[in-house]
Image 1 (cartoon, chains in turn blue, brown):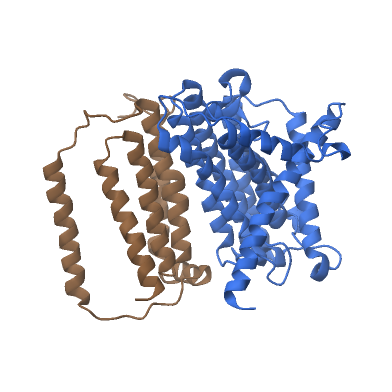
Image 2 (image 1 turned 180 degrees about the vertical axis):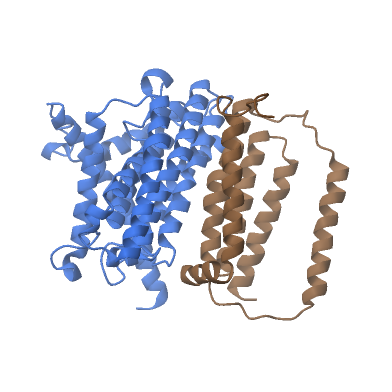
Length: 319
Length: 171
């Protein structure tokens, strides 16, 4: 295959995954939440169990009026949803699906790249919060920035533990080095990574920045139509990205029966399983208060992540 | 001109242009956002030069943390939407200092390297970085980490009045 065709196929594949997988997760959220709350969820759109509900939602969002508040900082306000969405699209490039280079862009520093690009999302939160010219938005944005900055630390530390165990920063390299007993050895890091990942994508119970009972909808309050839909899409892609990273780093990615042929299937199955847990947690736990949220980060997750680093180093040296 | 040359020039123009916008913009928060663009373009420059790790460190530390902290602080104090005409910015001294440093550095570099062409070193992989830092440069690295650690402890002591500022007991 010529280089440009290869490149084109990879980019198209990533964009397709970017557009399809989050929708599946979104539909899953509708149905899982509904059944956990003893109701049916959307049933009419598309016929079979309301499978087309998200498409209908998309059409609805496109039709809605795109309002920019009069006092808002127009260019910043309009740019913010794109800045929120873009990092997740870029991160998907680095996530390996299967062995033998089944990844859009193999990178020597893949793990570092992923963490760095995810960190850019904070800028979007601050941009939308400030440019909305709304005090609820600003409060939500400040909460969001404090939360994202805080939880980035345990996220990076727990990821560092896996990188240390595998001896590489490349994501396919980490999966290749993975062995089942890491499930035990790296369990605290996995837990810390997953919890701080949830906080990074501001999913309940970590949705203090958009707490609808006190802040209307936080930094998204003033958004309508397509721009609001971008924020929603960013949330679903965020679930996919965090689930995929948890899978790749801690659950062994493509490892399973016959990884050479079915590796991509195992990766996808694990991603959806982790996404299911993300939705499950949303239904199960009440929202953490702001002080509880910061306390959990600094007094529980960071120390556990540091202890895990020591444990990883000790085991690595002993073996 | 190769593709890399074009990319270097374009990214350099973006970095310098948005850097100028940082200091000339009348919009306080937009200045901070221009800084994001400028630092991002710098990361792009590192990428073109083959220093992948440095580029992503730049994004993680500067774009993801330093500028965000700066914006956060600005929004906590005073962040008006729209231009702030009362910004206290001495244009002439800044121009002289900035221009002088820029020209001086440019002259120094031009004098040191003339028009000699150098081969680009191999791309900086993580493994090479690791061997270099923990082999040849291990002492400066450790000294730096002790410096950072003491700064961290100092910040905690200063920001917590209940553990710091005990006066009049021993001394």
